[in-house]
Image 1 (cartoon, helix red, strand yellow):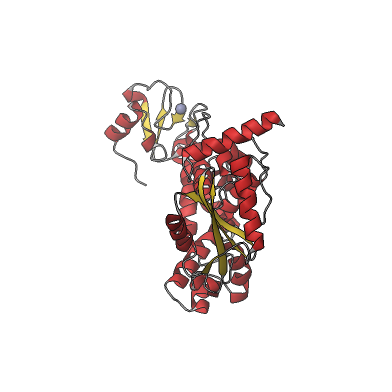
Image 2 (cartoon, rainbow, N blue to C red):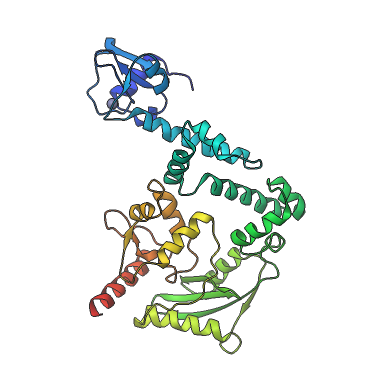
Length: 354
Ligand SMILES: [Zn+2]
């Protein structure tokens, strides 16, 4: 990127404008140090300033990086973002780690670690996710399965089947048909937190949502599994589902222990990591989005963590209600803050009583 004109650079560093971080650095000839525009150091006199496109240019001119604002760390974030965009564009071909690391200007080990810390997934997992997205959209548009597999960058159909089954929860063919061929049984029950719709495949519970009334809940289930065969079930025909929904009702309505039921979770690699982590939390235990991101070794992925919590389809059983904002405030909840508060209050009360 071209260096902005000096007047613009001067205005940016006087305003300590973060938007300019990564666009240029400034060196101070009296100290021999270079800074990013947002550095908190007192701005020097204009005649002592020199502007550079990046840290490399500043170093070449004999400046050393400021220890306070660490101007090259900002540049590293920029480079990681650029590498992620590169992966997005070239996911259809092999992307050796060494090539990506060289692009980011880091050693492969360091690159792998920094990438994961920033995005919550490895470069390889990101590439897989992009391919999977390409494949899914091609299949949704009705492409032939084999064509879609090659176009998404998979070398062979056999490789995609294992991966697709993990990501899609079904074979590519079944996905193209929007879950066609899958049979999902569902039931509704009134609980202390409102109507509860629970649905299950033969692998386990794939959907549990609270709402106000059957119709909107059923529409949500239909939107998640557009072509699956949805079967409303009575207790007689699906005793397992009936037992699970009764146990979940007993938990939210009468404070019985949270039931341990099989789950059929479907999400991206990162969403699965977030949900699995939540499954390991103790009752009454809460965690902030930031702590959760750090626990997953992805400290800058707070927003992705919050999005994964919001994408949870299985209320209470995957306890995303235990994730709070960093300041202890409730944060968001897909099923409403009143429900989140009620769930947490109950857990706290049980914990005190235990
Ligand atoms: Zn500085």
